[in-house]
Image 1 (cartoon, rainbow, N blue to C red):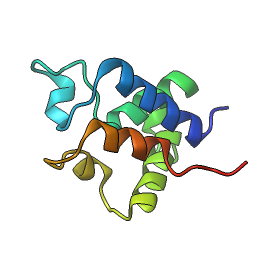
Image 2 (cartoon, rainbow, N blue to C red; image 1 turned 90 degrees about the vertical axis):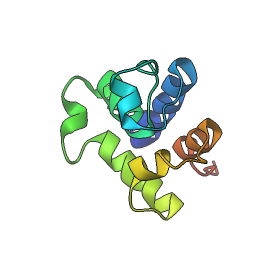
Image 3 (cartoon, rainbow, N blue to C red; image 1 turned 45 degrees about the vertical axis):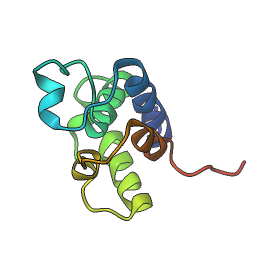
Image 4 (tube, rainbow, N blue to C red; image 1 turned 120 degrees about the vertical axis):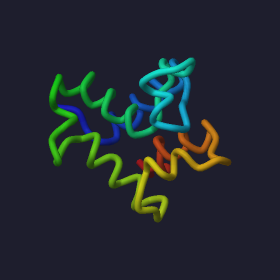
Length: 103
């Protein structure tokens, strides 16, 4: 079974591979339809690692990972944070990869 850390890393790789979108509407249509916002990337990563339908449960790894990131950043809405005008792809990748964990 996958972990939230694995979902976060896979989401970061998906954004590196496909690009990053600031607004939700860019994920589903228009010229940026192949790019991913942070929340969508977490859900896509969860589906890839855990199977179809897994990411839509309240206790899914994608939702738990999003809550972890919100706690780490001290924010209430990861989607809103992702869509801020000055947000960068580097900010999003750093948030997904999180703080360094000592071995």
